[in-house]
Length: 67
Image (cartoon, rainbow, N blue to C red; front, side, top):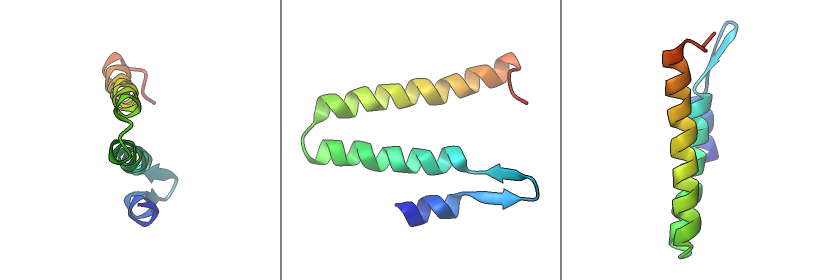
């Protein structure tokens, strides 16, 4: 997962892209691990938190809080 996440990060001159994608890959793996060991409540809580965090990024972007 780390290798795939590192491949998702792109550096261009003074900008770095793909950090959100890389972190989403990591958290998806963690949620899958939680489901795999049978910790469904933890998987649901983390899924909900990740959804809220990623949705807030879109909402802030629409409200004009992006650089």
